[in-house]
Image (cartoon, rainbow, N blue to C red; front, side, top):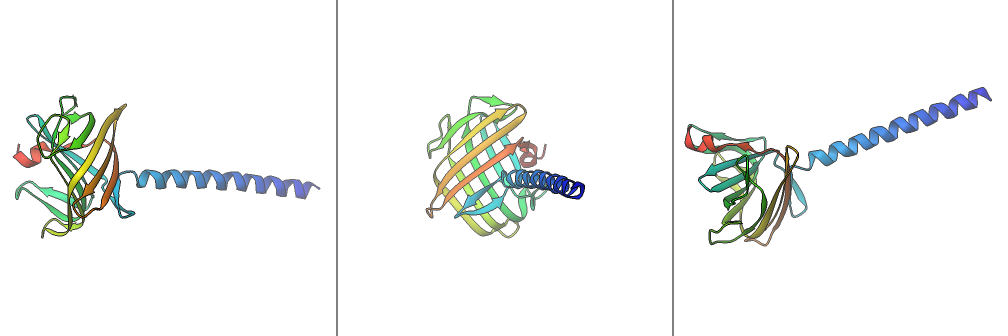
Length: 180
């Protein structure tokens, strides 16, 4: 009888340990797919984010860790994935990062962005790979505590749909482009 009780206790402890471990792995997988975007149900990591501030306009860039910016040559290098929002206009700024909901428009006006580009498997050094221009889209930027949550959706000129999310704090990369 004692052996069967110890056996049941051992199974119970193993089951609890396994279920806790399984929950932890699921949480890790969720976090790892947060910073990136999907095109045609394929996920592309864009773990990094940067913001370039020029007067009252912003450029918001999401990019892979395998991509970097050469400040001497003033160009991106490496191979990876990226989404760039250009001419993002806002009067609601928190630490150089605009907060709010923004739509796509070719005409520059407050609350809109005038260009967005998606690059997948792109070699920035050779300017080759898949590049798609936005024809319709939106981006929502909010701040919760010290973390920004950025959710975006684009329709590109080739009819592909891009949906992405970034959670973190985009780095101010303005000095990269102006050699400050």
